[in-house]
Amino acid sequence: MNDKLMGIIYLIVGILILIVWFTASWFYVYLVWILAIGLIIAGIYLLLFKKSY
Figure 1 (cartoon, rainbow, N blue to C red):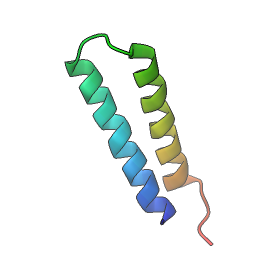
Figure 2 (cartoon, helix red, strand yellow):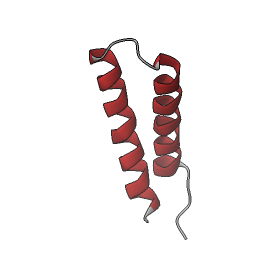
Figure 3 (tube, rainbow, N blue to C red):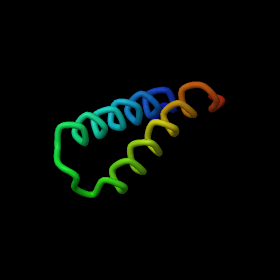
């Protein structure tokens, strides 16, 4: 799949996870935060720093 598209998908999923966390209860808090931050970082990396060949 295209790296730019994957980056956009990772960003959207990460933001959605944070929205769900803010509206949900304190359930798997650390797992959700780690997953969301990881996806956001991966999305930014793929959008800005990954070279397309």
